Image (cartoon, rainbow, N blue to C red; front, side):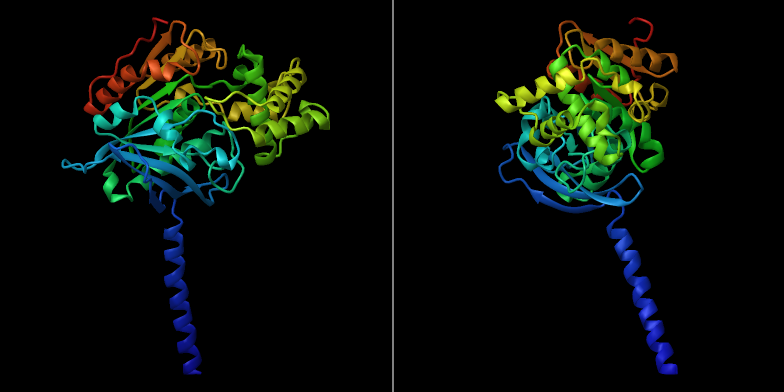
Length: 379
């Protein structure tokens, strides 16, 4: 009898010893592995990372990203961190920027960012580079994976990443930046967010899907989002039309990563034309559950907790400039500190680059503790 009790006690002790270690291993923000990038630019060190973040039911999920740091170690302690949140690049696993060297050309003014001594953390977002549906334009998914990437970077000693960070994002990444700021203080209070730079961000998703003036891009964006949300939320693809149209939409989404240097294939062009015709008179946000999902995943102007720089371009045909401006005005009306920039003639794909130096200067000042500028009331 005593022997049986001793064995039972030993087994219980082993179980209690193993369970906490497993829980710790899957704790959000924990680095799983970091693989050095051998062909990174000469002035940087870079790592492709896997780390834990939190899913829609608060379950731990494995996701990927990249960390880029100056080649020389920091003699002055932890480095300032910029979390770069990328724009829409597709929904397929293979579209993840970290799988290749996309981040080295995608991140604006990267050479200057590194010269200024920043460590850059670039999450892929769930489903890009990892085995799950990519929840495109789903705010909590983007925000949590960004915050946990910043945490995970601290597990790479040579990256010298600190807990103080700014978030800088373009297009879908602007949406991600705003959601990172919205979730930060409740989800990751161990980090210190100093500012949000949201460049050409989708904000009011219902209006964004209606008011973008480039009908071809709007059709492709609808295909990406509808395919993603049908799988992630169970939203019905039948809203978009007959089965033949649904199949075109899913093929467009599954087979096309955004490639800024390549001309689209003929099949892609034909698919976009079909999708464009299908949604010509469709107000997706007026249909349920699509409208509810759009509202739930639109960032809140009242929830910006730190100074924000918000930029648009008057020539943006993808994210309507008026929608971005109205979001900035709403933030101002809520008493937030906002620097709003409207670039005359600026296009969706150019504003982040033309305004990179101004953005970095603004970010530098946030880390330095300077009073954040606001031009509320002047736009």
